[in-house]
Length: 366
Image: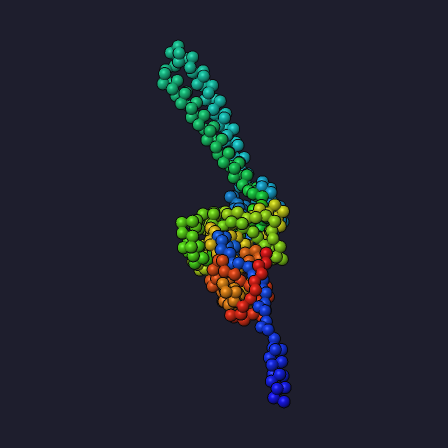
């Protein structure tokens, strides 16, 4: 019996399983390279510039020849003003000019007749000088009367108000019959907004600018330099990308006191008038010059509600879970701001049942 028991025990020891083989996981190497990080901004759409329509003469509004919110063309008549007093002034100045011309003709004839008489001493030299002075005064009288007529005609032209630019018009509510003009309740009649180009305001936090400056040193352009922004793209409310890219326009002189931001204005072409003033849009742009960052494939990052981490494969082929700080995405990669160095190997597939310190076999996945 003893011999039999010993034999059974030896048989059981022989049946124990061999240690399990390490699991095979897909891995990739974290890369470090200089990139320009994109930022997303929310903005309203503004017109490229606005032209304020101000009447330059007073009178009752006779006609209003446009529809609010509709396109108008440069030179198109917008309003006509009853300028009866100016018309009377025009007629009066016409008459004054005609009288001045008659006086000039008379003075010229007198001077012309006096010259041969003075040559034979039939009249004195002082008399000739008087005729000459009268002729010169008559010439000045004509010029003065012409200037007054031109001025009144200019005033009369102000009775027809035209658009100075192409754009979309919005008025302030003046209707036919209202008294309009300088000093009245309707000293401003309308605003025409140019929409061939539209603008967005990109507000860069001042702290972000300072960080870009500190990281890039002399390589980071000043915030009033157009090189601060590149690849400016606009996305509409439905998520679709606007087909035209934006360009730097200018930097507002003052930083936003309330928000602590640097405000950069970018412009986009709007040939089909697809973009409307006051419309909200999302703008994505690269900000600053290239900075060295660590990139890992998005599938390598394990995200929970509050944290993000990666499985790092050591030189001994054991894995360690490490918390990281993520930046923004860059294509199909995550920017890792802290917790990982370039060149380290991270798990990209097969990490579901890993535990820290576990040995693994690695397979690089292209």
